[in-house]
Image 1 (tube, rainbow, N blue to C red):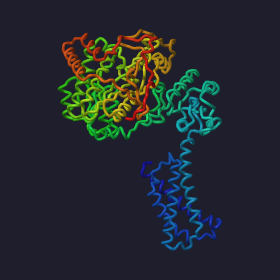
Image 2 (image 1 turned 180 degrees about the vertical axis):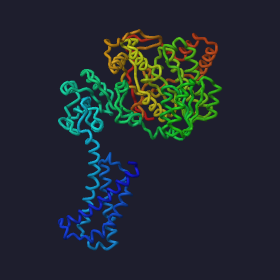
Image 3 (image 1 turned 90 degrees about the vertical axis):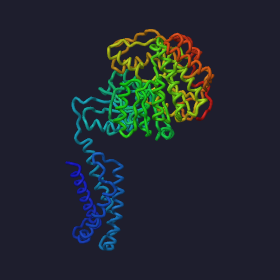
Image 4 (image 1 turned 30 degrees about the vertical axis):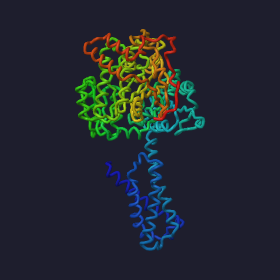
Length: 629
């Protein structure tokens, strides 16, 4: 049955129900005595009632509802349409014959009967479709225990009953008021802590985690309980994925490492962020990288007038250009295959597009690799930043946001020192420019290119071993979307010269990350897949920091963004060292590049940090003072 035929059938059904409701009202009024019923009045008024009620049902949008998904809002819509229709019918009859022969009781009874006659078939049809065809589950249906008896769990049960592939056996939920309750006839056994007992007693094949708003700590607890019970488990998408449209509520998937190490969803001031980017020309350097490409996705949603991608990698630039072109066909998108250290090319791009906002995410970031290629680190990370920042000042860019790293704090490696040098240049230039130069500093990003997560995943797929440099090594972790959104928020908040530090939460031991990834793959650490410790790599620290001990942290208007009171450098010295760096790069003088980095960043230290050297780690919550940005 096509859509037109189906709609005609529904309209026909409703008009029949109107006729029957009007007749039933007469029958009730005359005590179901057909002999006493005023048939002439009934037949004379019925066409008026049909016309009036039918038009109201149409114009109130009743026929846009789908019976398959009839619900309480549909019942309210029916009630509203019936009441309005009854009033219109009564008014029409009054104008037609002054309600001659129509007992007033009928005008009261009619809408009551019609609500029942229109609502009951719709709700019955839905119940039949939800349950009528699948009253019995397939013999091989998997027995499922659902964690979370909220709305997500309730919807999950309804989906299971329609498909018969899974048989919901019970719920576990920590809410005391749900203990002993039933959801769609499925019992709530008790709190989630009873998971192992519930699995054993009820012969559970699969645990489904229906907790889309669960925090990472809650997910870690649930996963640990599932592992102890030695049962297969799946989860619904996270709340932030549902909100962003990346996932649908009914999509079950394996628990990912992001679920365990991600943090609570970040609440952004989207109005403020949107106002800072909507209708403007925005340039993203490193637009094909992990952070850069996600920045482009987030910015594209906010309606910039033009988005300019600057990227050195042809392949990465092509990929993100194709993705954005498909997702946002009306977006003015320009792709520039450009090295940020190429002054001529950079100035050409900025002169052509005149960006209002620049997000500078282009950088080399591989610590061990850059430790032996200081010239490339200086050329790209330091001089590239100088070139782009100077051009931003020259061509009147309003805001320049530099993406930095926690490795810039007390850097023990060339990469960190090069990023700190870039920070210093932007801070110094801010004092002399109308452009607002803002720096955003954060730690490791889960799943970014070249990061530990993809490496561990490949090692696990190959059967191991998983290599960790040191048993005590820790890192701060953040998801790519969260980092990108907070970068935009900081850019909108900044007034120029700030170093914003993203609150990365608690540091995570890398060996814990490795163990969890092995477990999530269905293997046992140390048994199925070994973890081996290889020793710290060149330029690697045991502990990362987010701010220097001379950078007193201040609170901002956003709870996840802190402000580091920056250490000012002498502009003339910065310019002099930058000039010498350029000369050293032109002559490919590696030792000189390292010496100049040390001169500009005197806190640059030796590789690695001893386990006992706790003074190197500064607690994130130290020395906050109130500050509003």
